[in-house]
Length: 138
Image (tube, rainbow, N blue to C red; front, side, top):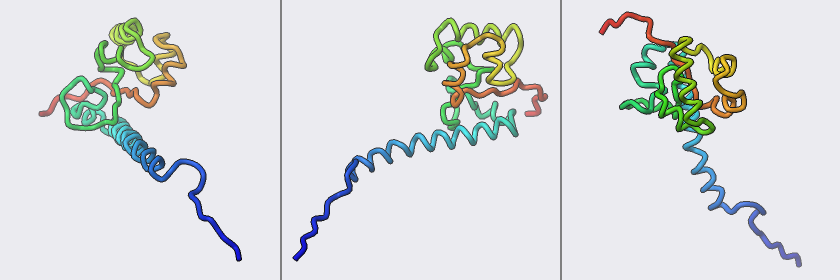
């Protein structure tokens, strides 16, 4: 006679796996929202601007997944980003005002504003919405 003992597979318990999945879902949702907002910025920047994409400091109802617009965000908001301090936030704003809006995230490096490793770490969070050049028709 043979006796088989069935046990759970080694590794995290079903409850722990469920907890991990529950924690992962909001991260995936934020990423999807960021991708949707980036698409909106690319194809309809004026709409993105009106919806407040990248401007968590403004009242808004559109969820952009936590993006921050380097071309419009105020200094205090930039200073709150991971890896940025007050000095770099002031520098971002000062260079933006002196040299005009940034045209790519990499401009932060090429203009000597931020080190490349900081820009890489913030790449998922930063977005650039071009300034409004369209006449206001509202």
